Image (cartoon, rainbow over all chains, first blue to last red; front, side):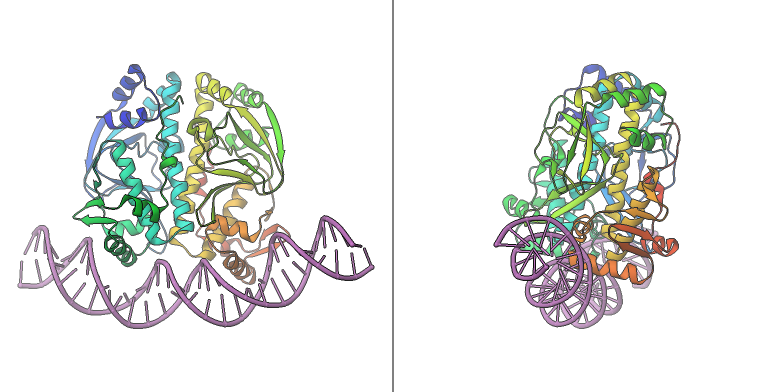
Length: 239
Length: 239
DNA sequence: CGGTGTGTTGACAGCCATCAAGAGCCGTGG
DNA sequence: CCACGGCTCTTGATGGCTGTCAACACACCG
């Protein structure tokens, strides 16, 4: 059940059999949530962290006027709530974007890991650093490029991240997000998300049908997005 | 020379004398840079990480049209380049916003720390998680609030972070950034930064004179900014 | 069959980027 | 000493990207 996480970590460095076993045995239970259900709330002090086994999750912050900003989209294999192990008090919420299954690891197990497995600790640390690299990229897109470019970038990124754990089907990924949710992620209005998607479709760059997103013109899309996967740290090397 | 970092960490948890000594002795050398000088470049593979001793630094990404997005502003006591210890290849640059002094710690020392000092390792990990929490906050500001509110938020945040390490003088902080640099940080044009600052000044919220920024109306500013310091994780507790 | 959620499109408005020009300040060099 | 260039700050005019409001189509579901 932790195989996708292991696969994700092994893209970045070799894990020993012992380390993999430690990971596999540290998860205590799993749980399923419905789409839209919150499973971590701002102000919570969780005693366990959760890993996405299946489905999509969003990390988000609310703003007083009723708006919402999704700061990260998490897919299967993402250790979505590893942050709470050290941050203790949540400064944001996490909710399901689709029906989702997650696995929980008690913080006490994570602490034991950090006591006994330094390299594994570094790999989990790395995992959160890659999350941070994605934040930097989103900030750059939000600050310095157009809505169309941002949307194209998000599609490229999600395709890259899903391919990495075997969740793409060639040029197609399954992406069950509404346009309102895409807007919350990109900081755009729902109406403008619709316009931007139409532009990408009419430009022959992507096809978007029933949650199935197909990239039709890679060069064109990556050009609009100015996408380069360097920030995803996909190289395997000693860490 | 690492006292500000130690102070910053001790705001979040108790450090043993041994841990403090380990930190103090792991830094190998210091270096000074002029304002505007880059000291880490995209694509670099540093063999050491650097801590800001004095001055201001910016983490930034360039975009193809010549634009720049500053993704983080770092102050004295910030372990600005701890990321490179595990990310290996830099996906962004770091440059001096003012004359700056930094201290370098070889990655081999950091690795030894992670082998022998699990709690200290967690504290450094925490340090990068707080950077990530700041990214989330910036994303939320950028995505869901006005330019004026973003600027007010940045002022509140920098005052809070500088106070934490003793770098504020009551309601005043020293902030040697040009309006162009503020624009790069907030994703705004220089012209609009100027207009927004005028608005904050004329509203009696802040005074900005010769790099000295004084908050005149805390309630007003925090209200415009919708600022709450929760995300900075200033509570001391076992980590 | 009506209600709800989602996608779609048009009209209009507003925030912010861009372009342009001038003022103040500072260091440099004649 | 003064002229000059460069950088920063400031302000106005204009335009475009994106938000808001509104309406309708469609699918799904009780």
